[in-house]
Length: 314
Image (spheres, helix red, strand yellow):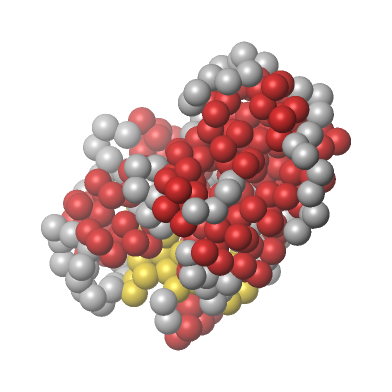
């Protein structure tokens, strides 16, 4: 479900490992119409076996496993539509890295709040870019769910030489960590735009520690942040030319337009909600938010961030 680059990737990947696939998009979606007409987007060409549909009912009745790959802020309204159909017994996988901006809720919480039928729910997270996967470049990702049996079943269904999965065991840590790394990606892009890329090492060390404290306060395992969901995804997010969040941050401080979705913008807002709720200081997330939303001077913000009074590292 979803015709963006990740939705299209799943429609490209799953047939290669033996699955029948239908990819759904809204009736007015330009990306869906382009896939239906040309069978391709800027990243890949869909296999001939993949069905492109705008019928939610047909899509939900077709599949035993439904992978949702839409923008994080689009999940709640989509779940309202899903809940109108009979989906009991199916497996849903959220391939989305974000938090709900206004509530700070994890996306699995949003899903469970709206879809109350008995279904299995998992998240598919971790590093990797569509552009690299379609070129045959392998990576490691993570599947996490509320049941280890569900996690193992999904790993068995979707693992391959292209994507090696690890079993997740901490939904809080994995979801929050995966979302927050996009905010770090924006910060990294801002450093690139200011020709301060040398500070990315400090950003990585302090960013991971900052988010680990939040995860711990929320009841998760702080060590999860140092795995694939967050720190393990830094290379793909803080350095890669394919990273939308890094590119957004760089464009922002240079006064340039950037048209692609950067999930870290809404996530920075959500993390401020969580920061207040759990009374955890998130200086990097606050800095990104203050620059984007409050229009504070980015040079001054980063100078204050990295030149704060001396303190012990941890």
